[in-house]
Amino acid sequence: MNARDIAAPLADTPVDGPAWRPHGLLRRLGAPFAVAQPPQALPGVHWIARNHGLAAELGLGAWLAGEDALPLLAGNAQPPHGTLASAYSGHQFGVWAGQLGDGRALLLGEVDTPQGPMELQLKGSGLTPYSRMGDGRAVLRSSIREYLCSEAMHGLGLPTTRALALVGSPQAVRRETVETAAVVTRVAPSFLRFGHFEHFTHTAQDTAALRTLADATIAAFYPEARDAAEPYAALLEAVTRRTAALLAQWQAVGFCHGVMNTDNMSILGLTIDYGPFGFLDAFDPGHVCNHSDHQGRYAWARQPNVALWNLHALAQALLPLMGDDTETALAALQAYHTAYPEAMLAAWRAKLGLAATREGDRELADDLLKLMAQDRADFSITLRRLAGFSTAPRADNAPVRDLFIDRPAFDAWAARYAERLAAEHSVDAERAARMNAVNPKYVLRNHLAEGAIARAREGDFSEVQRLHALLQRPYDEQPANEADAGFPPDWAAQLEISCSS
Ligand code: AMP
Ligand code: MG
Image 1 (cartoon, rainbow, N blue to C red):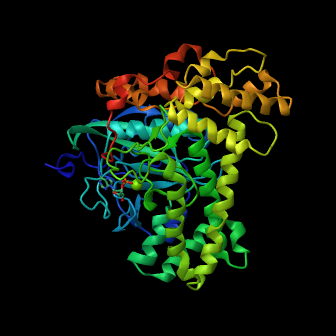
Image 2 (image 1 turned 90 degrees about the vertical axis):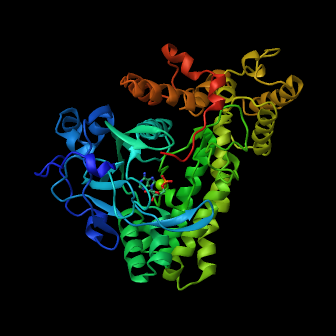
Image 3 (image 1 turned 120 degrees about the vertical axis):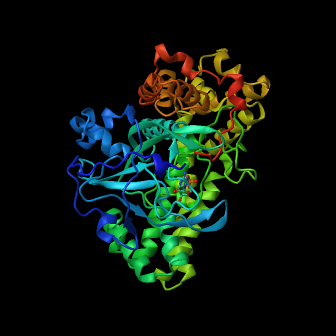
């Protein structure tokens, strides 16, 4: 029996809900970019989590707090203008994968918000023309991870798609084992991916459509590119800069995406498609968070280069709009080679609490990372404890020093650090405050998510809500939640987080 056979019927009468914009980007473009596709209803739907803070920001607070929102966000009712699925393609694990698309996602609509127009998208709402071999569903486990991590990344101050709500259903969904279904409502100005552009160049081979898509993207999101001598090269360069900035931020908080396929790269430089992501624990630059990534293609330390590889794929897709002039495309991509290292160095200066810019700062950061890697020091805990580093004479600095096995090596680094701080007349307390504002105390480690998932499977969603609240303030001391800032338990190392979702 498949989901379609036992699904409850869709409500006959379309539900109004928010003040939908009649002409959102995808709706205006229509075919071949997006096709009408109703969601498939789920039985026994209920809230698992609602993001009232985000709803208030979007002007949807009262609506989300009421019960009218549930049918729409469960995919059990349609907005009056219907829902849309879009076509994209992509490179997966470095190999051209051909057509992909919204296989289990649907655009509900676009709303005007104080931050500009935002799209609301369901994920897990049933089959679409792009479902391929999939069932169009998302399981509770991965949906909780996506909901929590989207909001954790936002709390950290990183660009990301947001999560508005999480709906559960007892509907069985088969993965490695039988799990239950869930639907996440995601929010972003756009869910366009590099893969949308690749689609019209390589799969549809429709340059007119490619141009329409690029023009609409420029008009909506990169208006400054319109007046450039080469608007499409300017678009590519702007996306390159946003992606470089994003990657520097991922690396700086120890975030590992896990599936950096070109279909999972946002054209807006947002973190998108949370699957087998992870935050670094004991520091290993070669850490691979996705159990299905046997080659380690998306290892933490490789992410910045993978992003550039993906940008090359985007450049290739945009080439027909640049008169197939490879030089122009390569020149636009050049921005990455300066933007990324500059952003990364600035991030590390901030993480070390350095207010000024001096020769040797990069080596100071690199050498700390080398020591951390050699001794497998915990990434978040080490940097957080470094805020408490005292430059007072004969200070023992045990809390951070004890994280290292090679104490003489740490002491030698600490002496250089103290000297560097003295050179800019750094005041310990002020530096600590600066460092605590960029080195998070709380990150969504796998074992925390796993605890929330285990409870949710028993019907108790309080841990999802507790973690959501906790991760909204990741830089704050939260004495009641000290345990969540600790080292991962031993069992966490056995967790295998795969692409299965
Ligand atoms: P992902 O690895 O989650 O980024 O997904 C890659 C592609 O597979 C996208 O086109 C998804 O829409 C599609 N996909 C993933 N899981 C499913 C599913 N259960 N049903 C239908 N399509 C899916
Ligand atoms: Mg994806």
